[in-house]
Length: 286
Image 1 (tube, rainbow, N blue to C red):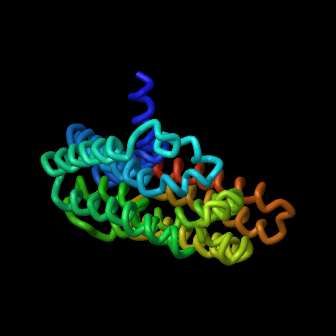
Image 2: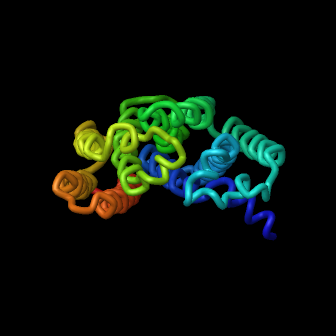
């Protein structure tokens, strides 16, 4: 049982659950009141396995970095609880199963989106995080894929709604991760990772956070402007978005950057949950 738990933790379940929430939100936005339960289960099941596979591959590639960071130094690969070979086999089997499910029960557009996401996350982001502060932008591509995949599982084509979902999640991720990079700056510096707060300082991150929050607010509003959502969605997202912007601007006068970074981070979680719930119930809202 302990071995099963160890492999389970290797998949980074927190990331899986968060991304499944986005995938379900995208799916339900596209489906409206006509929900194909079997398709939904296949989409979420296949997506969860693909994400689990990507996270295990990422753990393998990042094991040396993880050994230098306080929050990750107890992971199974760092502690040699699981061998690299076993982890690679596990990731390959899980990932293959995920893609087979998606290919058999969804459509090839979803398979393509998930394939691009896993390649970007494991290879492009995995390499970029070691060399450039722009790695967060690269990583956001894979992080924005689940709602798009969920949406396209229903529509079987990439349209304006899919593009807006991609942009909204991309713009949301940047303040979210820059806030983490603010209050965990020491960890990243100790690991030798050139995140923005380490490379260019916290003030640069604060400017980026505000800019991306503004972009998030605009893109979130466009989902209503183009008729994909109702006015309750718009009202709630604008209130939360402007509150988030207020928090972001407060950073320029913050006495404690770590405390401020945590506030921005936790509020970003509230926003993404609200966003996902609103999309999921959009068909029943005015």
